[in-house]
Image (cartoon, rainbow, N blue to C red):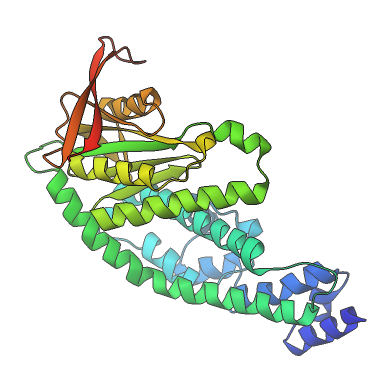
Length: 340
């Protein structure tokens, strides 16, 4: 019987009798990974408070700002002491001014990364069937958790490079603009027409495969052509670049490389101008116009408005005047195609 062997294997890895008691096979497999993730987290909330000179309730507020409930955590370690000390003892005033917003963004980003990592492991690595080797799966779970910790150590380097490029994008986008909350930017959307209907008949695996392929191609295309994907929401991506021609090129290529299934045919919209910039996202009439143009486009089409310059590498074909939701006057629109 595999279960006693698995329990003995976990005990050999350092699991206590209390940790092992009353767990079924699946929970025992998860315990191997849990032990890796909880390694070195032997401090309590009060320990962190004492080491940082804070009150326990002040430490709790910091973690709540990161989207974490203290009661849900495995424990605290030296990294938590350093984190709380940095925030509690800041004398620059920077954290007081922008810390609350940035902590929320950092917490959301870390939460999404964690959820994506767990989902990727469950869907692509972990296999559950009657013939599985429980000990091998436990070791695989522990290895995956260790790799997550390695990824965590790499994030500062990745973040530093993204900061460097973001600073330069911001400088270009704010040239000649006095308001720090406004940038000059081109934005666009590409969505999949009919995705909702398709999702009702497709299997979960088919839906995940389609979404992952769409997001992957969007990310790779935007990166290669000099834009970026601001966000993706299932069947839609938001694109941004300093040049409207770049956004149009990304949208057109993404549409051209999507499969021929008419149930999920892509379409897009592009606009440019002064937009509100907040915490990595864009807002305002220009963004709303790009979204409305996307909704107006037919499958395979990218629309833009008459005030958006998509550059010499694109051809504009008249597409009439459209009454768009949220706009008091009809908008003259054009179909964007690559220049022949």
